[in-house]
Image (cartoon, rainbow, N blue to C red; front, top):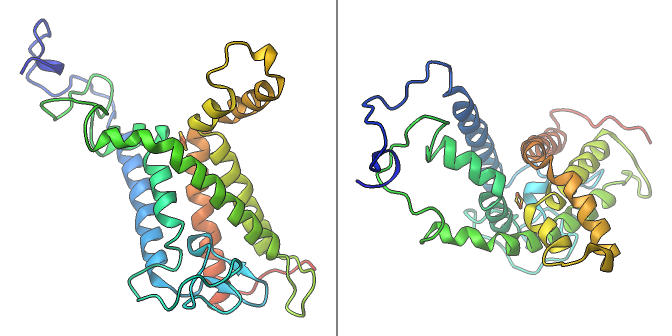
Length: 265
Ligand code: FES
């Protein structure tokens, strides 16, 4: 081999690493965190139960938009565009593949799973187990470049989630209502927007390819705003995984009757 740690001129060290600290802790925690989310989301998305609270119009984000006649009555905020779905198709099938693609191709998540799962490399001064490296220049990883297009769809899905959160201000008797579920749905949607807008592609769309910011004051302002969010992209990536689970879990518990929603109005 002539590349990587076997390249000519590199010291020949038989051990994979000489590090004695717990360098494996961060990749391990990352793997566990991602696996927990993927496991939970997969089980919930395919379960098809307890995702809609008819009294308060709470809809779980994993099932939105719900656009088939299989959806619970009242949960089809945008209409039923499809007939009955077979059990193996998740109710949120319209948005889920794009949201998955958005997160999978995200620059931060790439860093996270390249290091922790693909071990390329696992940590500084820890040799990777792969013999060669072609980066994102070949299939399939070259597909990571479609991230910008997933961003456009993810922004649309955030609009859908926002509408869901607004429609959830609903009282069982009709009219305006407000409960703990609204706080959770709204908090989730605000953080989803923060994560989506903090995207590196969004930052480039806002301020990229400009020669003079002074000639484009609106785009400069947008770029400045996105840049402030962008430095928190990693934290927002993790926080939104947590708020998505929390929101779905709360809706599931209320919908199944395990707990009652705390009502303020
Ligand atoms: Fe993470 Fe775009 S870079 S969502």
